[in-house]
Amino acid sequence: MRNAFADELTRLGDADPRLVMLSGDIGNRLFDKFRAAHPGRFFNCGVAEANMTGLAAGLAMNGLRPFTYTITPFVTTRCLEQIRTDVCYHDVPVTVVAVGAGLAYAGLGPTHHACEDISFLRSLPNMKVICPGDAWEVRAALRAVVGQDKPVYIRMGKKGEPLVHAGPVADFEIGKAITISDGDAVCLLSTGNMLPEAVEAAKLLAGKGRSARVVSFHTVKPLDEACLAEAFAKFDLVVTLEEHSLIGGFGSAVAEYAVDHGHDTLKLLRVGTPDAFFKRSGEQEYAREELGLTGHQIAERVLTRLSR
Image (cartoon, rainbow, N blue to C red; front, side, top):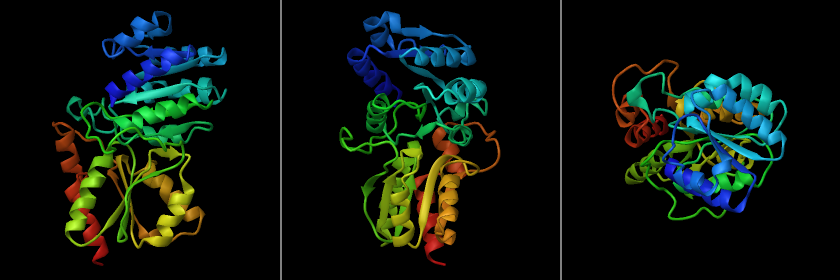
């Protein structure tokens, strides 16, 4: 995802002189092409993410379109006050881009895990929250962000994530979910880099005679309420999938929607990380297996729920 981000941002920067890239002492080689093409629009702000965010807000107030970028906890939790007060309060078009969301940096321990950021960011007024499902959605999200003028948070994985889309996503729209495959037994609503696991779960469910609709809910705020209304009306089971805490994340947002609109919340199954730090040693695949976030574990939970 991060390679797609750097490449697409360079393309967009070539076409739009307003784009400015601010890095929190990471990805210097990743942005070599952008920096070479636009040396006056790339700033390595060092390990000073709060200052970076304030600088971005000032640039946005003066007509530029800044993007801030570093590892998820450091570009969100560390500078949450600046995002809230400098960016969201003034409602300026700063795009906060996080790399390594969820458990992508599982091997580096809880300091680098990010299972609370959706909760933080979606609670801020004026902020839009986008969690692309693969590299193609990253590219599409960037194009969509440049075409609007609100604060945005883009939550990415790291690198090497499987591609789900066969090519460029032409119908990407902020706040509009994308149906990946259709089915009639269960609806799997996935956000962020859990999308490949959702696809795998759907394949396993199909092998058990249970067809699943898979939807990429790349935007957590604003939610695609039309998609949710159809899912709760059509399916006996609606499942939210996220590499994020069950508290405050995508599943919570869907649960809030269901309660507020009078849908049957007994149809809802939320899959995410527990209310606990993950302190075991291992990479992302190990962490997912330990926390029940893999495709086969999701399929097993769905089958158990459907058999009740």
